[in-house]
Length: 372
Image 1 (cartoon, rainbow, N blue to C red):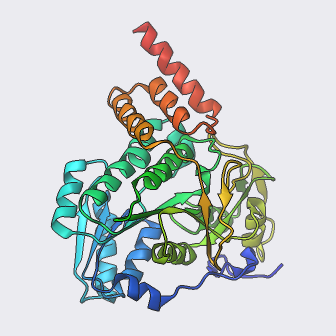
Image 2 (image 1 turned 45 degrees about the horizontal axis):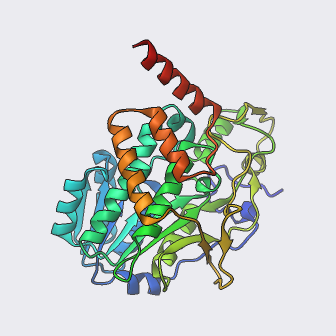
């Protein structure tokens, strides 16, 4: 195994496949003279997207995030590299329909990149309404605003955890995918791009492993057989931009990421050159699966594939059923009725298999309600 610095960000040796390269000419063609909105703009992928699009001469670049501090930092960085681009920072929440209407009416985005999501699986298992409100209902409000105000292209970053989900995070992202499939039309193209684990992004295992290695270990891994699909941060942004540029109708898109990798192999790759670093296995966390998938058993890959992405033919609810289910989910969320909310989620995503932690939480909530 090759020896390298623990700070090395060249992951080609680990991935064992070509790294996707960005088409800067295509990026410029997509965004020059257009108004572009990025939600979750201060996050890892949102930040890389913002830097790339700022260099493509957009008419304006609207950067939306819930964190004022991180957003201010990103604005300063982008202004240093692209001082001529009009930047519009929005500290806001995608769940607020009135604020979204004001944003779309004022700034008229032609293209939306939806990178805002709650992603931390174990935490959301004990706070499922955070996932429901942000990932599902927030996506619904954002999609409806885009439709009402004449947006042309809408791309959401989804996840392989939406396939046969075992976590509320994955189930709510699956609902978000169905929302986009229902919303696409001849006037607006809505797409979801499923990504795997993004190496070195904020919240990924890489910074945790790096810190543990520099401290001399131990490095903690949940299970020796756990595997995930991996890609680099720049590669993730490149694929999102490629998804926006594709012709055709709305769809779910999946990148060609090769084979999944064991997380313990990632640890050994990072440890190479460092001696006596022990690895400790701690057990799967709530909502985690042993392995992820890019396609479920009820989905099919379109035979017409290109070099980077392929389309997925996926099940969705009938439009009226989807709207009714969203309305019921809103009601249960307002009432903090976790049992009703889980029932709606399972109706919408029948392949969702809730974790023991989530089921125990629901039982606890039900017991408390009965006692009250």
